[in-house]
Image (cartoon, one colour):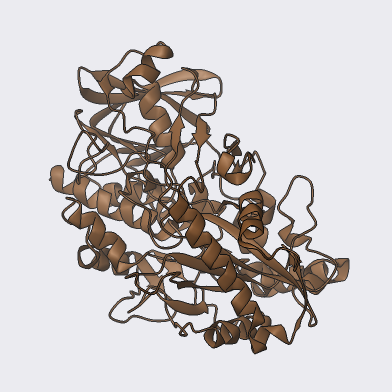
Length: 538
């Protein structure tokens, strides 16, 4: 049997960071188990290539949610990274930390050390921001963050102007003094290549002699002696293998895989485990429960000016941007699909924004089989203004279907299952139309394509966003953190309640969702979680 000090299950946004930080001193041996394969693929490294990885089973779990009544019974596609770097290797790369109030609420709920001022030094330490250092931002850290201000499509300036005409302030940095307003998104790239957690943290760690990374290694069960986690059973290339952990087992599989592995190992809702014939190691109703996710929709317009459609669709345009990328590591292929965005409140009495905006200087109304058609957009000049809710009150769950680790779990989002979520989305889509009606945008819009001018009444708008909304890929809270073992899965030090030598360190521990994209906070969770582990093993 292989023996290591620490076994980390998952090499994603958090797991890569944990592996790097636990191995840095050379004192500890670390085994990382990754169910997927390598991240050394062209469409992974090329930022806009994630249109190709969106359905690619070689790098993507390609989960599918249950038909959701709140989404007109649509069964939503849930991409999750199945490779080194996890979802940070296939995501849209937007770097948003979340609002100060988000983290302060975590701390106020009984999680000391998780307030904004507690976490700010870690956020600054982990990043290398191209825009430079200030009170809120850091330079010199492992994760490079690119300022795209001078690289975005010219149409972006019209969007920013229209949003300001609609009443939103311009925001130079959503991770700075304030989050509200509109601006250009910073993204996790460096020199035109994706800066995933694997590139920033795991690959440097892999050069150390005390780190071993096993790819195509699916963790199937956590091994226990009584209530103490002592190792992990996994399958690799058709063989069943076992690894022993002298100090701790750390789950960093993310909001789907971490609760799945806990349940497979006998930690979860007692009735579910009994029904599936899984011996109960520790009963906890919260494992897989409390699922929160951001749900979004696009409003798409036909423009009077050229958009990226006219460059990315024709063969000569593909050749042009391809040459620009390969020779100069610049151009549209070096950016995210979301050039800009913003945050706003649907109710001025709120203390922080509850809605996020996205501006895309292209459109993909016409589907393409087998891929997200980012690299083959519509044949006419189109663009989209998208939005998603930030802290919905709807709650879902992720529960295993069987005792077979290769069976995908049942994902039940329960989107728009509260009146509050429906009401705020109704107000939000009306605001998107307000932005589009402002002079800076209205003068270059030929028509609204989706949902179209015939969709006017509140009832029609609600029916439309139920039909067309979907996840924006930010599931959290399925192993949520909290001091009360009756309401949480892990304690504020990320130790699984009721068990020894077992932690969860990934976005599944978020007590509540954050205001914005979740990747930055997932990376931060890896950084903070590693600190907690190192404090306990001095």
